[in-house]
Image (cartoon, rainbow, N blue to C red; front, side):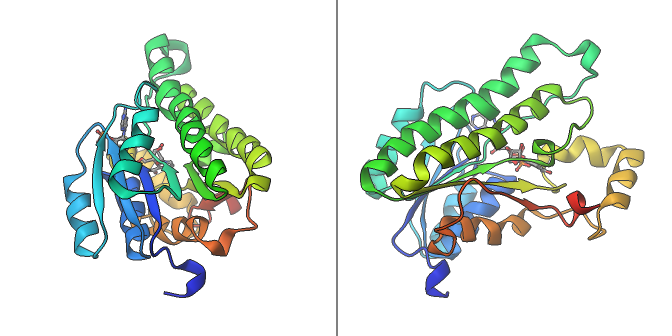
Length: 251
Ligand code: NAP
């Protein structure tokens, strides 16, 4: 591993690390040398085993991010178990689909609470610690719907557009304090989050036809961007939203 991308001795908190993009990013960071605090409501036992197989430490932190009740405990449990915090990946997220004329307040609140409110307050709790140590890397997981409107996902689009704005705001406040805040905007990636799209043959075909790379992304496609934004290679990158989308936004 080039020294620029070496994460040896660093500790990363990854939310929603039991599956999909969160698991892939946790394994990429561990592959670059980081120890992992895997945060989520479903124990990331498979991720822990895979991190340990890479020779790194992994701890599970149980937390339901539909509320912010656990954010301070996530910081203290990680520090107690792994001794430091260098990287936060705000990955946990949900999506609810319905026509806007039928969309419920419950589906609005559930998505905004998990995808936006918890992202901010966990960044705040971890950011306070990073500011006090004078260094840190925060990576928020955004979306194509940080840039575009989408259809039938009003709370998801609002949350991910909010994540884009929040990423820039936190970068403005914290860049001079040694904390880099950036985001990764995945394109269409084969995970639980997109099962419904692939199950609809027409929607699946129209999505595929628009992707210049001519394939859905795999969660492992996000690993390189995560290692870059977690490493010293990105020390002068602040408030950037890095699309990893097979060219979707270029079309
Ligand atoms: P996923 O497989 O459904 O993973 C979502 C993760 O978030 C799971 O680990 C899930 O845990 C966790 N999570 C959800 N609600 C939670 C809660 N209340 N408390 C704690 N953890 C919670 O989907 P994914 O595609 O990997 O999604 C990861 C992130 O990427 C999300 O922010 C998503 O919006 C974003 N994203 C995905 C795509 C895509 O094409 N797949 C594109 C753009 C952005 P459980 O297993 O316990 O539910």
